[in-house]
View 1 (cartoon, rainbow, N blue to C red):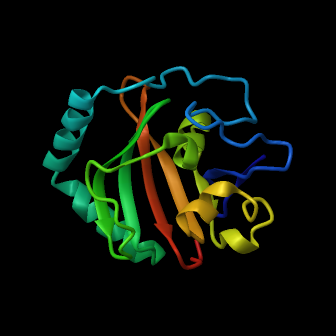
View 2 (view 1 turned 90 degrees about the horizontal axis):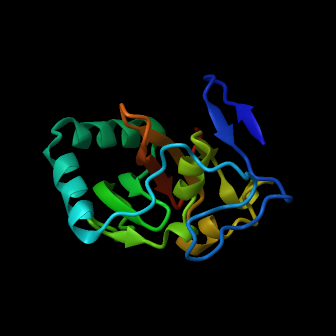
Length: 173
């Protein structure tokens, strides 16, 4: 299920034996391992602290712009991902996806939860034509064709969340 990309970074591909995400659990099938340093939840005050902390990092908007330019993708986000929440802490939205800073998604409906659980990137160039992802509910739910995300791991080993880009158009990644 894990293969190397051309540049050598692993990416996750689901196969038909993997289970779908369980609504509300933030867990996905395919692995019985639980990540060693995965945060289980954030309260509202802590989520606000994460948003404010990331917003103070002046390099983050530049990073989001560089990723958008390099990939051609129009929505790039740093997301705080826990077992029960997905929160956008920095956003570049050039495709009018409609999710701003502080916006939340049901974590069980995201591919980011899989990235965090497995601690490896996921890369999808054309979801509707991808043998592994054409039947996956997330691209269909959000109307996305291309997706790339990598986990953000803190110095203490905790997975903070993801750096993620999506687009409604296919992208050569």
